[in-house]
Image (tube, one colour):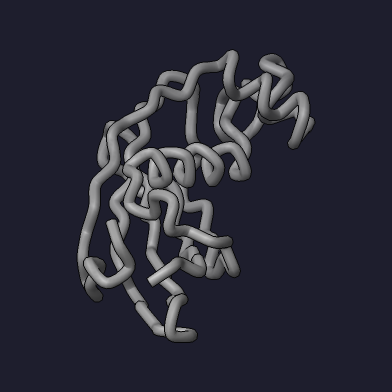
Length: 141
C-alpha cells in the first residue's frame, strides 16, 4: 500500500506461523543461548515447565508476519524506532502465532517521506496476547 492509502486506526491481521521446538532452539543457540530456550531438563524445572521461545524470537516472528502482509511494500525506507516492547506471556513449542496490526500514527516528514507507526499485538492460538510492540518506519509518499 502507498503511505497515502494508510489511515489512523486501520487494522490488519496477519496469517499464522507455527513455532516449533527446533525453531526455538535454533534461534536461541545463535541469539539468546539461555537454558529456558535450550536445556529441556532445566527448563522443565523452571517456572514455565518446559522450553519457551526467546522474546527476541517472538519479536522477530511477529515482524516477519507483518512484513509478509506487504503493506510496506517497496515504499519502506527504514525502520526508525521500537517502543513499549512487552513480552506478556511465554511462547511454547507448537504455539500458532498471528499478529493484529493497528496504525497508531501517521506523519508527513518531507514532501516525499512520511513516518508510519503501528502497534503489533501478537496472539497465540488460545487467543492469549504474548507480545505488544510499537514500530515506526520512514516510507516514501
